[in-house]
Length: 213
Image (cartoon, rainbow, N blue to C red; front, side, top):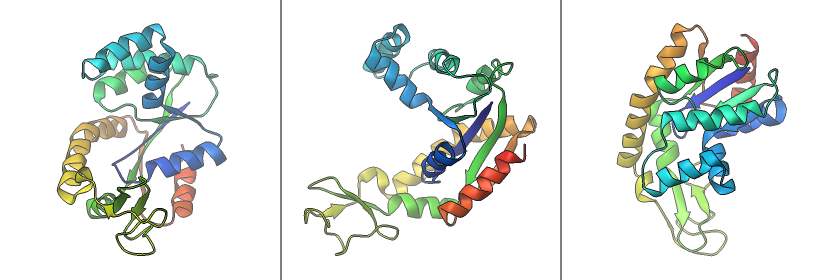
C-alpha cells in the first residue's frame, strides 16, 4: 500500500516524511535515492541510468519505473510505503497504477503552503562561504547577522535562492505537478494538508488524513 506525499520546494515534505517513517510505520522510498543506489552498485539498470546521466540527459520514465519496480519487489505487499519524488507526471502515475494489484496507491497528499511563504522559506537561506554551514534569517539565524557561528565566515545567499530564482523553481513545480494532483483527485484519493505551522501539529493532521482512507 502506497501513500504519495508531494509538496512544492520548501513545503516541509522532507520533515514530514521523516516523521512518518519514524513514527507512522512507513517505509520511505525515494526514487532519487534508489537511482543513485543502482548507479553506485553498477546494476544492469544502474549502468543504463548512469550512461544517460553522464550524457547530461534525464533518465526516462521507463527506466525510472524499472528501478521503482525493483525496489518495490524487495518489500512485502502489506507494507506501508511512503513514495517520495514519484510520480512527477501523468505517465509515471499511470505506470504506478499498473502495480495496483500488489501496491495500490491509498492516498496522494499535498502539503499545501502559500507561495509567499515558500518564497520566504527558500530565499531566507544563508550559507557560510568558509565551512558551508547553513542558516535561515528567520527560522535559524546566526548569532551575529551575516557571520557564521562556527567559523566566523561570511554568510551569503546562493543565486538559486534569490526570490526570482525561487519563483522560477515554483513555476516549474506547478506546471509539472498540478496535472498529477488532478489525476489523483479524479481517482478519489487526493487530499490537501496545510503545511504552515508547527511541524508536530502538521504531522498529526497528516497522520489522521492518511488514516481516514
